[in-house]
Amino acid sequence: MSTVDPITLAVVRGALETAQREMTLTLEKTGRSSVFNLAHDYSNALFDHLPEMILQGQDIPIHLGSLIPAMKCVAGFFGDDIQEGDVIYHNDPAYKGSHILDCCMYKPVFYKGELVFWTVCKGHLTDIGGPVPAGYNPDAKEIYAEGLRIPPVKLWSRGQRREDVINLLLTNMRARAYQEGDLNAQYGACNVGERHLLELLDRYGVEQVRACIAELKDMADRHMRALLRDVPDGFYTGTAVLEDSGHGLGELSITARVEIRGDEAHVLIESPPQVPYFINSYAGNSVSGVYLGLMMFAQVPPPYNEGLYRCVTVDLGPPGTLCNAQEPAPHVNSTTTPMETLADAVRQALEQAAPDRVTASWGHASGINIAGHDPRNGNDEYVTMVLASIISGAGANKAMDGWPACGPLCCFGALMSGDIELLEYSYPVLIHRYSLMTDSGGAGEFRGGSGTRIEIEPLNHAMTVVGFGEGRQLPTAGAAGATNVLLEPKLGRLIHRKADGEEDHFTHNALLTAQPGERVINVNPGGGGYGHPFRRPVASVLNDVLNGLVSPEGARLEYGVVIDSNGQLDEAATDATRAAY
Image (cartoon, rainbow, N blue to C red; front, side, top):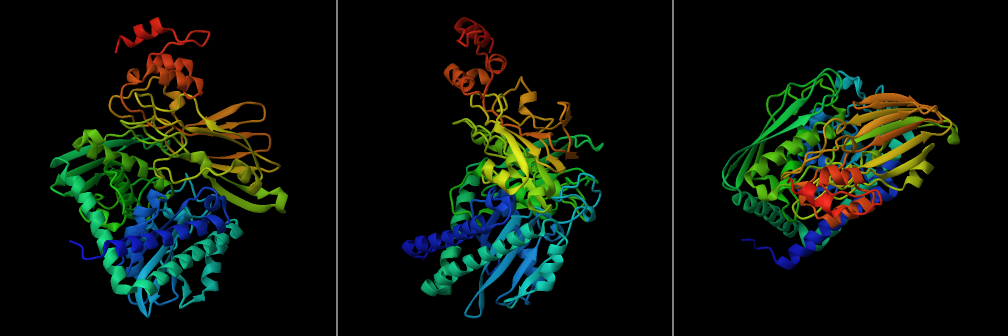
């Protein structure tokens, strides 16, 4: 039993949460790129001296899980050479990073000469050098062809900014002003977190705060163990399929084998050998995928910290495989593909053990990056990931429909699309359409959330476009008997519409150039449905048709609800169609 006073525990817990939230607000308000200030593609966490994660924010799941091994790797790299005023930077997956675009800043927090905390901030930079703007190079055969790898390095040493090192990094990135602005925002966020933590230590002292943190980690541990004790002991298997990338690899399968014994779980991942394509996942990223699949199943209450995973062990399989990649495997697409497939496999395995917790999958990321020179600003170079383009639909569950425009799975609702007008203000583009897609949500008693469509035209310049992700060939997985009839509307796709109206359609990752007067159209998949579609109330289907989420054809073919030429329900035909179920 804890000896910590519950009132003090609640105050300390609130203070830690405030520190983390203030870090997040700092990034939002001071970030230079739209990836930071509009889309919120960043995550913040607090670690103790051990270092163990003591608080993760409500941020990007693929960031947060990988921070646990990354923090230990970075601290271990410097060992005893960690001084007050140091700030460390890092992105390299060989040092447990996720992918090289996710650059992470670590600041040790000292109190009266003693290392007590770390404030940690990871964010997706819009460029990291390499031959392709924004870093997603579908032709890369090795990691060296993707961009700048940053092993753990000090950007500030004993409080002194190392201009030579920072200049070295920024010189190797496109659109330098944006990358420098986001790096400075990360530094500010770490400092804000440090300030709050020092105020907490001034008030309660190191011993009392550490006792509270220990109890919070124990509390998370108890929550996860209580859940696992309710799951029958045994071995459970889930397999998810990775789409054919179009590079002669074919479809690839990832299998998760989960053993439950009492209040502990062991997860074994089986994946094919790593491939000469950018979908390999290094260990830090893959651990994050496992944790996401686990948390989708567990849905335990807060606090969310490293204590959650004490009772979980992970074996990613032999080195040199897709989910335990080794140098020089290319990897940049790994935070979406295969991470989302890996998370699906883990979740499906756990749901074999507890069918009452079954949920449908969320839409996988299928998005674009854009780059060019802005004629409005002296042809300054710009590059960005259009994160509004990867917003897919959420999966349904036994209680409710999936949320529309809430995904993708790797971000699990934490990513924002931002204001379209601000994207147009920031970059020389015109966005003709940003909308939900009819019939994109998986059919079911509870319908999957709708996916999105975005149409972008470059203004007075040639625009480089990189398409990445998946969900363009296989619809999002449903659950509990959900079935789809209309498959095409549920798939992502990339379309290049020429000025004469001719269209090129891409169902694989692609690199292209769009000219003024042309449009790049990106469609994201919806979420999976739950339960048989014929069990969906007729009134709910009619409401979906009224709101444009389901077409009359979709209502008839997928839900057995017949609407006549006047837009009215044909009750007799509906009863006859549904009687077959």
